[in-house]
Structures are given as structure tokens and as C-alpha cells.
Image 1 (tube, rainbow, N blue to C red):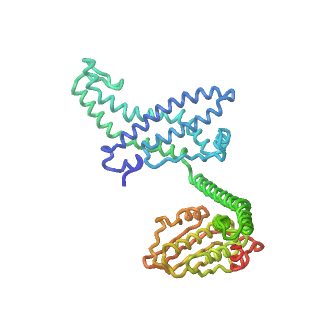
Image 2 (cartoon, rainbow, N blue to C red):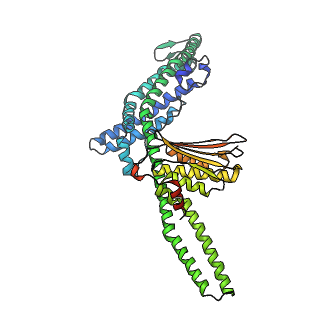
Length: 435
């Protein structure tokens, strides 16, 4: 396995021939340059901070420097350095500033920036002067002697007056350059470790971030369900009622038209078309959010879906309690999609739906005796449902060996709602869903 940091590279025999010595030198040299510039900026902002003007700018500078340092970290640390900051809950500069001011990561970046601007960059420069400057000065002894012609004072301390002495000094410089490459890499590794500790998210922050993502996805699911119910209600109370009125008007017009004439024929055709459109609209409304699901719960809704299936289906969902709306909706549409796939692709003669809620987990099984070999990636419509179930911390599993049988299993952890909202019997609810 290839080394990921200078410390890991130091124990390899090929370290001197690898890119890690140059990476270490580049990281420390960049630190000296960026740190010196940061020192000047912080000095200016420190003066303004006396008048309480530079404090926000000081904080913003720490955030900016933290981002630069995470980018530079890639020179000597090949593992990703993620941004520790959260996405603000609302748009706008004010929300962004409030979020940043409340984060521990922001204050750790400011602490690192102040440390970097005052202490760390001089240490980087000192390490470079000893690890690179001294050997290079010794290596240049022959050149210095050639330029002067008489003698050369190497590193302001050692006088060289002949070429044998100059070449011996250069040889010493080459040995030192090789030898000091090891402690130089160790210093670069320590600097990178300090930067990672202060500038990348800690485990608790990662967990907070994951929790925030899960919560936001759950809110999106709730919003989606609310919008689905609104559309269903608007279609039911608006377009459907208008179509019912239109159908009745056409029926009355047929009664007034002379029988057997072209007008009666056209009215009969329009009446039939309106009835067909009304039936299709009712099916569409039922598909958006079936009323039986909202009124009676998952068990009766699954029984209703089984009654509508092209393949005979046995339903076992007795005693299923009412569950959270998002859970009932996700499980219902998973079951309905599975039944649709059975009717279209499986060649099954019979299917079975089983739903149970035990130990705080909803378990839904849809089985068929078809040919098997179902592939969820083949456009079955279950991929989106699997993502939706995953938002609820659930899983969707398909077991379909060639030759069958096929089993689709949905597992969603969820609490049961109070018994006051328990559903009625599946058959009663099923017939009510078709009214």
C-alpha cells in the first residue's frame, strides 16, 4: 500500500527516491509564504480590532485561511480534508454569519490562523533553513570559490581557499541534504497532523452532519407527502366534480335529443368519452394518494391494491396498527409497484402480500410464483422507492433467483400510532376505497 503521509513514507527504503522529500519541502515552503502573508493581514486587522471593526474580518480571515490550509494539506496528506462547516438553514449573508459564529470549527480555524501567523510559519522557515538552506550553502562552495577567485566563506563561518576543500564541503552538503530529508519530512508530517486536527471535522461533527442530512431528507419526504395529498384533494374536489357535472349534462342532453339522429349519436359518443375520462381521473386520484390509505391505514389499502391486481393476490395484514403517514405511504407504493411488476413481467399465477408490525419494525413481504430473475436496476420503478424507504431508515430487498419464486421485502423501523386511530377491517376499507 502506497504511503499517505510523510510519516508513513519515512519507513520505506525508497523514501529518498520518492516524491515525499520534495512534497515536504514544498509544504513547508508554502507554509512560510502563506504564514508570513497571514501575519501581515492579522497585524492590520488587529489594529482595526481595537475599534471593534476588524473582529468580524478577523473571523472571516480565519475561515478563508482554513480553506487554503485544507487545500495545501493535500501536498503531504493524501486523505481527503473535508470542510467542517454546515450548510446554513436559510439563504443570505446574515444566516451564513450566524451559522459560522455558532460553529466550533470556525473558532478552531481562527485559533489555527493566529497560531500559524505568529508561531508556525517561523518554525517552517527555520526547518527549511536547516534542512535545505544549510546543505545547499555547502553544496555551492565550489561555485562561491570560482566567483571570488581567492577564497569563500561558506555559511558565514567556514573559510574555503582551495578547490579540494570546496569539493569536500560540497560532498558534506550532499550527505547532509540526504540525511536532513528525514527530519524535514517528520516536521512536515507533524505540521500536517496539527492542521488536520484543527481544520477538519471531528467525529461528533460528522455525526451531527449526518443527522442533519437525514432530518432534512425526512422533511423533504413529509413535504412531498403533503403536496401529494394537496394535488389529490384539488383533483377530487375540482376537476372530478366538473367532469361529473359534464357527464350528467351530456346524459340529460341525450334524453332531449331525437332518438336515432346524428345529434343523439354524437351526444352518446361524448357521454361515453366523458365517462371514460372520469374513470381515468378517478384511477389517477387513487394512484396519487388513495383515500382508503388515508382513512383506514396500510392493511386495508394493501387489500384494495390486491383487489385491483391483474394477478390473484392473497393478503395477510390483519391486526396491522396505524403507522406514521410517510411509512404507510412508502410501504403502500412499494407493495403496489411490486404487484404491478408481477402482473407485467413475472408470469406468476398467484401472489401473496404479508404485512406485520413487530418490535417497532414494519415488515412487508410481496411474494409470487413467477419465473424469477427480477433485476431492480432494469427499470422496474423500485429504485426510487428504495431511495424513499432509505430516507425512513428502512431497507428494500429483492430475492429473485432464475426460475422463481420472487420475494420483495420492505423493512422500516417505526412506532405504532395510538389505537384510537386504528384502521377498520381490510375488506370494508377496500370496498370504500372503490366508492
